[in-house]
Image (cartoon, rainbow, N blue to C red; front, side, top):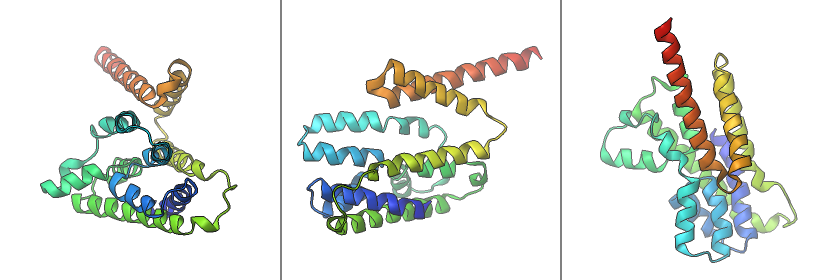
Length: 214
């Protein structure tokens, strides 16, 4: 996973410099914001001098999914207030995918913290190097911003493969995303999460009802 974040960080660093920002913005975004997709959006927001209130609202909507992550992220294994604070800050999509898998049920809080720290170092390092080398890469290169989508696609496929007996969950996720795209194109991500959560609750209630009748 860390090696996968390096080229993604390089792509982000290149986008930062091609947007006209100084190289150190890449290090600042990845160290202080550290929110993946939001960082890509922030490049455009900062260069357009968007008001802070708009940036705050955008950050809230983009990262609303973390509210759902918190329901099953194993923060209880992390000991100490400072450690819990950093673990909460460093909760990313990649960390959530890794720590909620079946193989991670026995991982200690210390292992989770080291995992989060090293993944952030990979991300910060890749972005900083990408920003420093950005001037060497032609501005006409296209597709760098697709690196994030590609990584999420790989994570989704790994999750589906690890739960081969549960095909209904990815089907519900796909239908939720499709419905959000059609009904709420301007708020696709939060709408998709809400629809998916509602579908899972209905599914759970239906399963319980069938189990009682059985």
